[in-house]
Length: 348
Ligand SMILES: [Zn+2]
Image (tube, rainbow, N blue to C red; front, side):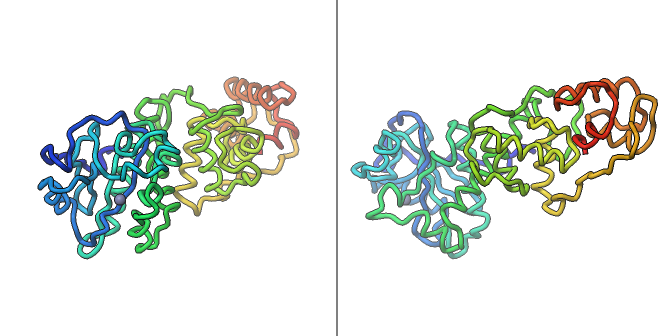
């Protein structure tokens, strides 16, 4: 099951009238998070209210513990933020009603908040993917747009011990999961924690890269216990990130090339899912005191094979030698296909 199928979206539109102007918006450039401010009122309670079309205010979607209910098509305007507030124009260059989707969280009384909240978070992440928005910069609280009159959705979130920042972080987690699943769907990346054969290796994030993919890797690295104290999550793959990737790869016995491909990403996800794993796979092996080279057999050969990404069978044949030579070349070591102390100490 893909994440997109995790929840269903119900589209049950109200008729055109005061609450649904029926005019198209100008494309979606941000999302506005609301809560209904009305404890216990469900998504369908809200739909029933706005379907009477007696008020010129509404939102596109209402979310409770059962429904993600769209009452206005997403390509149409909804009146969910006052026109004469300045912040939306200042930050996004447009009026919220013309360029954003309004999403309402239902909560209180008999509504199971956990269920309601998860749908709300999921739906925001889903819309970020759909409209190519950045959850960090393109989601805004109604209270931010209209601070004089509104306190939503923090008012609801805070009651359940969730800050705005924590909420955004939750949306980002879901959003990242969407990205990972899309990579998998495109055949470019292994499903974390699963062995996928024939995975293309052309998806990599490496030194010099910039953008959301780099940010995602930096977040994962920090969560996995790596240190990015100087630059943090800045979306730039510089020396600090390179060092953290190499250290992570060394800790978990991966090829220490500083490049984030399917293996490294898979290991990162594995560690994030099992925090108990952190540091436990550290394969520190003392140098055996002699060269390891073609013709050798045994546990050391197996460890070397794993480190240079050769199927470990414990037999140092030509394939392993070739992989060792490539590794030495990448790491700036003498390229002789023989594991002496210098190559060993970089490997382990
Ligand atoms: Zn609101």
